[in-house]
Length: 292
Image (cartoon, one colour):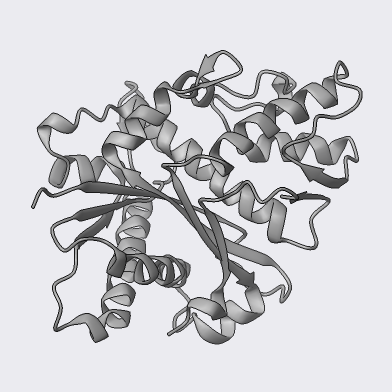
């Protein structure tokens, strides 16, 4: 039977290295699809622009002072906060004053989020809860990467049994922003590199422990790392996944975390709802729903 190579791209939300505020909203998300479907998704269009191009640049209607070099939902949310924007939004509805700068930005962001929320081949799975719950149920150490890895492990435990035993699942997590040497060569500081290794190690260990009940059945192979490490060790040469594609995948995962936060965080200024149940491939779970 032919093996399928699947890719799950992760993103988290909340301040995982400071769990002192009990009601702080925390969550992790994965966007999952076959490599072939990921690449096809980048060729799709939103408002006459390919998804790849859309992810490579900041939101076009975002003031430059708030924009980064590429697509980040948080940039828009930070700007909305300065403008005291609040309310309950549907991704299906456009703001009435469609020509105002705020309305244009809202409509642009909504179009991007709706594309992912309604996608038929990209599966979005997220789990969330409060810092109080995480402290009491996931934290066995002061190392936040271990705690975060356990949260991702809850999602991996959920999905692995549904793959064919011949399949492989690669889990790509975002690496910290690289620093620059004086000559312009990009490096990853040792401390940050250790953070990623610790995060992936925790994810894999937690998943393996939770999957012990499947020890007598052959399950799909899975591995975790940054895109760079996965490309070196797990991607086949004929997968043709470029750095540009990888970065776009991460920005799509960022949108999954935004869908979770905006729809599930009751304390947020802006709330999303899905009145028509169009988010068929999006699922949100509370942490306690996934704890074995």
